[in-house]
Amino acid sequence: MKKYLLVIALSIPSFFVFGQSNDKIARLKYIEAKEAYKNQDYVKTEQLLLETKELLGQTNMRIQPMLIKTLSKIPKWQFVKAEIKKYLILNPDTSLIEYAEIMAIGKQVDSALIVENDIYSNIEKKPLIKACNEYLSKYPFGMYRDDVSWLIAKTKNTMVSYYKYTDIYPKGKYFNQAKNITDSTDKAAYEKAIIDGTQDALNYYLSYFSRGIYREYIKQKLNEKIEYDIYVDALNSDLEKYIKKYPNGRYSSIINDKLEEKYYTLGNKYFEDKSYDLAQINYNLYLTKFPSGKYATIIQDKNNKCTRYLKQSGINDVLFTFDTEKNTFGIGYEILDLYNVGYNLQFRCNGDMLTMYEGDDTTDIKLSNKTRKGIASLSLGLNYEIFYPFWLSAGIGVGYYTIFRKEKNYDLWYFDSGNSKIEVFPQLGLSCKLTNKIVLHYGIIYHKNIFHQFGLGFKI
Image (tube, rainbow, N blue to C red; front, side, top):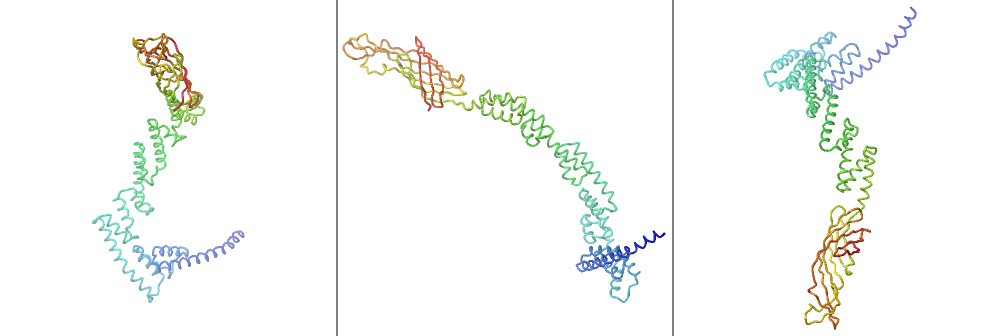
């Protein structure tokens, strides 16, 4: 028993302190309410006065008149009559001006409620949305605002309008009905989006159901669909496009396998076509992405060859020659191309052909048995690289062969027209590119016998 008495004794000061604290807070709330009323912020005034009453546990002659005036200003006529009854229970001084003001407000209540009721009753006789908005504008806290707001939501019949209703009236008469509509519509739209499965359908759900229950799942499905569409497009056009966006994506292993084959196949194709720069691009892409790939060893070897081949180059040169057929000298032009067939053009002539002669032989001139043989020829051939830096050439030439005879008594030479002829001969050659500017040449000419040709070319 003593124990319980001690507990009660200790509790009394705390109750007293709590009561003092509530009174102080209530006083501050009331002062704040007066300031809000002065600033015509009636909604805030009502809230502060109701909080003050709750803290005090009752009303009084300061709170109640201000609350009645505030409710008439908002207006909330449906609550004014009840608050006037509470005011009268406090036995106010009937001689006060304040009492007269409260009574005047009381006389307005019934007529104000009748007007509000008439406006609400006639809403459906006018353009509905406009009439509803006019009601809410005039009676933002009116007794029919829940019903009017529901009429707006039903008439618009959109997710936004139903969401707006449930946000404003979480305890409204039609909250469950609105919630069922939004939930069922949301579910139907979700099912349609999933069945359709296209990006457009999934995006439609996300655009028009901003508060949908299934948004996160739809986002996931949309991301998967976007990835899949990029994957399908990549298979048909650009494999790199998928890997750039999804390096570790769901289909990355499939795409990487195809990329590996692509780089290998393209590289080999360009290598066979001797497009070594393009081959090397594909080989390097392969080695960068697949350093341990199944073709890595083969590709590394071919890539090294590409590097070597790319350092090689052809040459166009002027060729100076000497051959053993009557000590013939020549000058020519040749194209030594790495990847295509080139050509060579050559003019040959010996020294005897350039000697000064008196003219044709005649029967009046006595000629000795001393002779000179003149040669002049023009040849054309084709060059083809057999292995770098050697080019094989093959061609055909047309030569003019003539004889000059010496006069018996004088050092005069005459053209022996009876022994002149034009003949065709074949020739072969091998050119070696010694440097980027010099070419060494060896050739064989067959004209009744085999003659050797030596030459030196200089880049032009």
